[in-house]
Image (cartoon, rainbow over all chains, first blue to last red; front, side):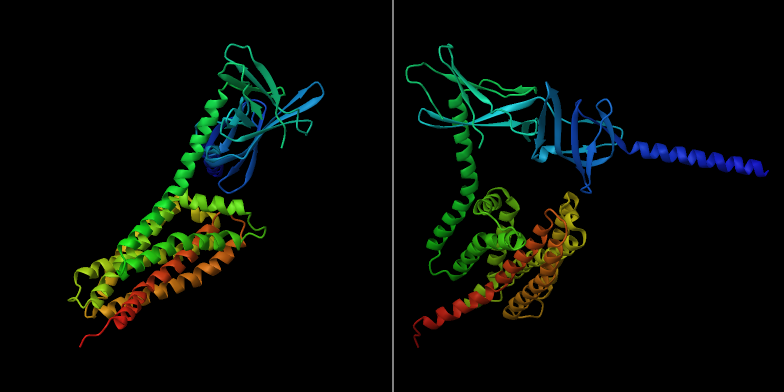
Length: 169
Length: 295
């Protein structure tokens, strides 16, 4: 009789543990991140979380999150290139829903944006890199600014082609 | 800077080349079209920001001209200016400047003002509520001064106006306490919804209570009782909102101090509004004493 009771108790404990496990798993959602991108998030309790995805996927408890920054590093002939997304707007807020997958639009490709102001036939160009969530993107080479971007200007028939380097500052 | 060459036919297109191994999208763009679009956007933004401000000032000037010698309207206009012009710097200084040890750059102050006037529409709703309430609060004093019969019809309007102002005061007290206790949770979306429901319920309840004050009371003492309630309410609000603001400033919060600062600012504005009927009586008596007495 004692053995039977002990067996029943063990079974009940095992079932409870399994149920608890199922319950805790069911409160998780999946976040898909492009390969090689490290993403730092903040949850609704203002706790920072660094995502370390396995095959581009990672599990997070259901809730509201905000992307703080992301970065991608590449090593090219002895140089470390880093692309980093910072200063996000409202688009960076997303919800993780239990049992569902959410894809984060971070990393490459980024958009090269030019702001133009004119005074008669004179033009002033300002350049910035923008991410897919309208965040500001910064690029660095070995921890410093790389050579500035270049602006290529041409006319419709191709008879005029010019290249102007931007200047930092 | 680049100048269009005179001897070359356009249109021109620009593309960018960014150094590095990363994928960067750069579409050919017409610089003239981008410049024109940017200019249009800038003008639209300026219009959005300055339009409402300009409209308020033009309306104030036109109404002042039309309302010469109409003291109730002048009183309302003064309060409109108080709410729209002075209320803003008050919020600015209480909420941000005093609490920011680094101080503010002039640009940041301008940006804040632009945001408040141009984007933050609840500010204009608050201004509207205060101005309309002020107008309704003056109905009975005007009828008293003009020695009209007992103003039964104005009683409900006055009670509703006083109820709206008092509901804002009560909300300011409750929200300041919530902000002091729970910090940034006080500005969660759900709290905004609850605050709105709380405000509407309070408005209804206080309107009924204030209407009940009119029973067995002469109009003059009824108005005096309402203004006394408003004044005491705002003093209580300040007594709660100011310490709450201090508590919130010492917490690690992002924006909850805006709630307590709004509590202080609404308290001050409604305190001044509660003086409105009294100010009008003073005006009226002064004007009456200046008029030639024919006997």
